[in-house]
Image 1 (tube, one colour):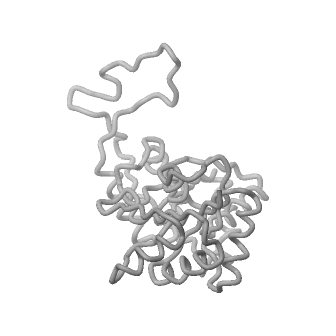
Image 2: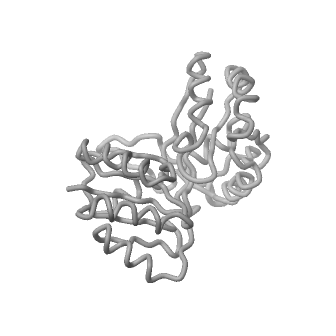
Length: 256
């Protein structure tokens, strides 16, 4: 079985109880960056989380002592996330290991995680999922943080229809082409952009879609979380006033 486990996008407190449970009980972990992921697993082992039911009926109450012992919160005993084998699955080795991993997942339980957020969103994780589906391996999503949806929810832009574009291609023509698809669909466009390219990209948008509304979200869930809002031209001017910007941006563009 393959678990698709969402991890925090910045604030480690955003890890879910269900994610903690499967990461502690699975047979092995699959990660883009094993070194970074081991730090996350260490954080999970340092947590003491109460045990709660998977679901609660409307009239059901959780006892005050749920998940507690006389000594404090219940733990999972010897089940330690940091003791799990971590197998790398990244762009440079996906073709070599994807079939082997799918065969292994037919017999064992593995958790796919990414450096931040939900696996398979703008990373090679979908290829492992596709191979598992092909081999009739059960795939189970463990929902959690996602930068695109988090940014959209707090953007103030229309949320009834949106188009996620991942990382756009670098040329002005390709950027405009992708955004025109969102405009024609009457959808809010969402994509990721690096700090090195953000000024140029917003310039493309200001030239091609001067009436559009833009929201930039950066450092989401972290201490320096920030939203920059305005027309494309206004956001461009705000960026120009800054000597430098850090952190990956989630960019949202509305055409209505």
